[in-house]
Image 1 (cartoon, rainbow over the protein chains, first blue to last red):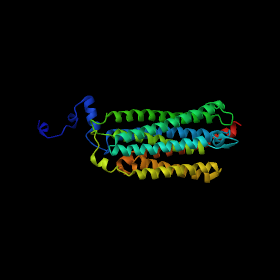
Image 2: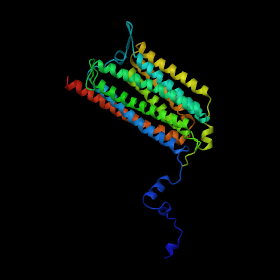
Image 3: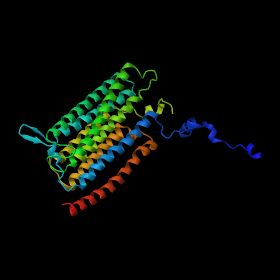
Image 4: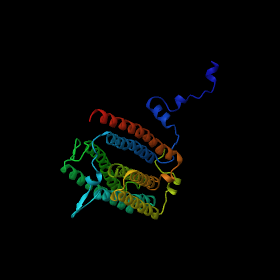
Length: 230
Length: 110
């Protein structure tokens, strides 16, 4: 009887039971990261995406390292013929510059959003989306060119069959990310212009979309180095 | 967590546009240099070393400045950047696996 009078705090009761209790226990009003939840969640999503692309590139390394057939020379496969001469990797180089440029305009859009300059922020986001669309267009051109030349996921005219499968998987998944980013950018830019974020007076969505866009550029840095240049 | 940003978070993210333009120019320069590695047909460890060096420098600039990681608190930086090091374990294991498979193919399937 005397035990019942002891002031033992019952932590189980604090957040209630069932689903409510689960939420209360896992949130518990403790901040691990002193940023908004949206930004923290975007970072965690990007971390998981890093593992997806990391696994793709590791898989590419494994099949390239284990094949006994010569790997097609990317420098020649991705060259463009201008007049009589062939310039190695020209299209890929242009795509790299386009994506870096879009990252630069995105960074400036985020900067405008911090200064609550919503017209310039939205305009720069549209410019970023346009560069992204140019990138996807050039990738579609590259894919069609390679498919016409006979590259398939199960073989190609120049060497190891795994070249096609890794190429289509890695660049295809990256292109999908760019396409999603373009759609996201356009949606947020339009909502920004229409004044959707005026009520909360919070433009942080621009920064969150920016994180995603810079990540897409970041992944391309690794693909460019490890797939095209190696 | 509230949906509004703490005032301090907004303050420390104000950087001059010039900073972004400088990083942009640097990224252009690094990309051009890694392209030139291929253009001049550098081979062997020099080629791989330069490619990885330029790749890591570009990645570092994008994460640190464009993604503002340089100005985030250490708890977020650790939570996002440290787990990626786990990929190095995967890469090491799969490199050994690839070598082993390659050896087996050379010995028995050619």
